[in-house]
Length: 263
Image 1 (cartoon, rainbow, N blue to C red):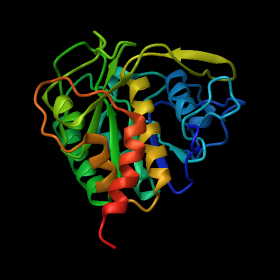
Image 2: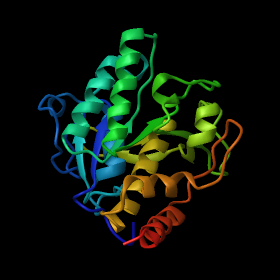
Image 3: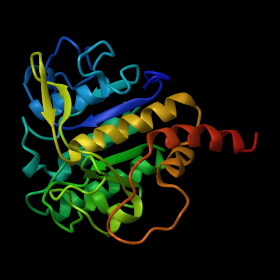
C-alpha cells in the first residue's frame, strides 16, 4: 500500500451485497439499485478495497475502479442463487472487470443454476479475468461448483498466528488452488458512516483481491496468466489447507515474471 493505491485500468467486479453510501467511499459503478439499499456486508467489503486512503480504515486499492454487482439482498449470504451469480459474473466481465471478488454460499443445489455458473466461469477464464472466491464459513471440508472450478482462486481465513480459523471451510480444491489470508477483526466502513468489523472468509477474500490488484497495478500490461502464477506459485500442492498469501512476494513476483517474458 505504501508503493501505490492501484491503477484505474485494474477494474474489480464486486459480487456481494448492496453497497451503502459512506463519506470515505467514492461513488462506485453499480446497477443503479444497490446504492439505495443499505447493506452492511457489501459496504464492509467495498471499504476494504476502495475506502479513501485518508480514512480511518484506508482501502487497499482505491485508485482501481470498483463496479458493484449485488448477488444477494442485504446480508443474505446463505441463500445466494447460483444462476444470479452466473449472470453477474458475465455482466461484470462484459463491463471490463479484470478481477472478480465473490462472497457466495448456497443453501440448496440447483442443477440448472450450477450449469450456468460453470459456463459463466468458463467464459470468464476465456476473457482472462481472475476470480477470487470466499471459501465459506461453515467450518466444513466442503466445496461447491464455484469453489471447485479450475480457474477460481478460493480463499480460506486464518487467525493472527496464520492458522486456519475454525469457521473457515477447507477442502481439496481450496488446498490445491487457494490461499489463506487474515479473517479476524478486519476494520472497514459501516453503512452511512463510521467503522465496523468484518470476520471470516469474506474479509480474507477482500484482502487477497486487494493484494492482487496492487500487484497487477504495478505492471498493468502483465497477462492474467502471469498474475495467477504469482498468486499460486509453481509448486504442486497436496492437502486441504492452502498456503498463506505473502503480498510483498506477490507484488515482486508479478514484476519479475513479466520482465522474464519474451519481448
